[in-house]
Length: 171
View (cartoon, rainbow, N blue to C red):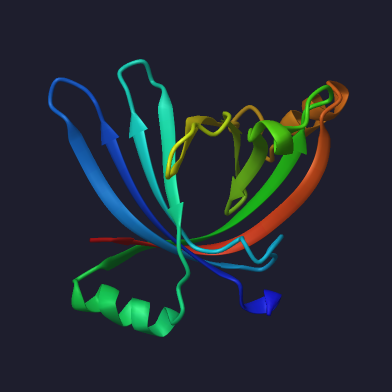
């Protein structure tokens, strides 16, 4: 049933500096729109290097019982730190197919705050790993509409918009 498609994401971000630092959070998302049955749960690990290069590494897995998951989070003293709505509009390149190359370009709005994200081609291996570049568009582009207009003028075309509710927990 597509109306009950859910995603579960664990994100750990580490910054390589003189003293490595890291934090973790768990994000559970209920998608209002799912593109396919494969739009299931995932674990995402991101690593940021000194050169400000971000790599996304993810594994996907099913969450059979969200209530049980929340109970287990509570048992492990997880703290709900945020709830928000993500609206992602994906674009395809005018001269190459991102679906074939494994790349992604999107404008994401988190509770209305716009960001632009480029995800590079997937690297070979057991987990999905790829470069990720992301930055906020506001205050100069407070709605993200200017970026979308630029993409349109450059020949990029919208391919999908996905809206989801996200809860983030810290362990």
